[in-house]
Amino acid sequence: LQPLAGPAKPAPTQKEAVFLNSVDMSPKGHGSASGGPILQDGDAPRSYPINLNNEIEESNRLQFKYSILLNEDVENLEDTRLLAAVDEWYGVRYHYGGTSKTGVDCSGFTSNIYQAVYGITLSRISKDQYRDARHVPMEDLKEGDLVFFHIRSKRISHVGIYLANKYFVHASTSNGVIISNLNEEYWSKYYAGCGRILRG
Image 1 (tube, helix red, strand yellow):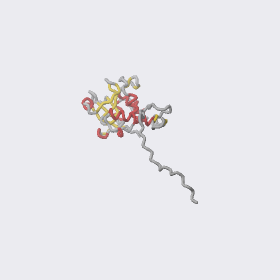
Image 2 (cartoon, one colour):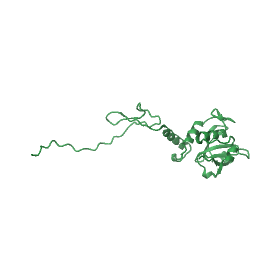
Image 3 (cartoon, one colour):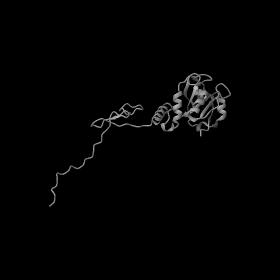
Image 4 (cartoon, helix red, strand yellow):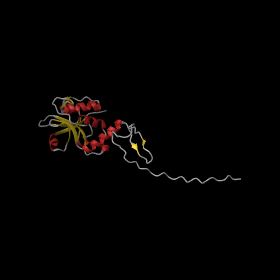
């Protein structure tokens, strides 16, 4: 005898897609105690901890920030350690002969950045940094290259660090550590050249 068949099981149905609302994806997201956001799936709130590497998160934040400031595509800003150092020094006041965050001059600034980011000790004076650099044409400038100026002088008297899209960061006598553009009339007038320090 064949066993009696039980009640037919309903055919499995595909689970409906559930959309996640109110997910906080800010860099310092507010969500569960474990650091991840609370995702509402229609039944009950559950915690999904996100273990993001803080360094990667900070790098992404800096790339987005400076892509806006420099009007440059995010993917073209590859030197995130340089961006982090620039961010740390941005706004420090100018002080002739200064080498610290209480006050810094142009070559003191470039020296500090190169030591912190690349582990390279630059000469202390801008004209010596110009002498030590391998000169490159402006169209070949890369992140971290040095840009030089002779302001109301035949000799090199000012230096900055190239970022992207003709923008460079430097310690300005009037505004402290600031970002300027090589196409600005003042800087194009006094532009003397650019150079690259072998960074390994």
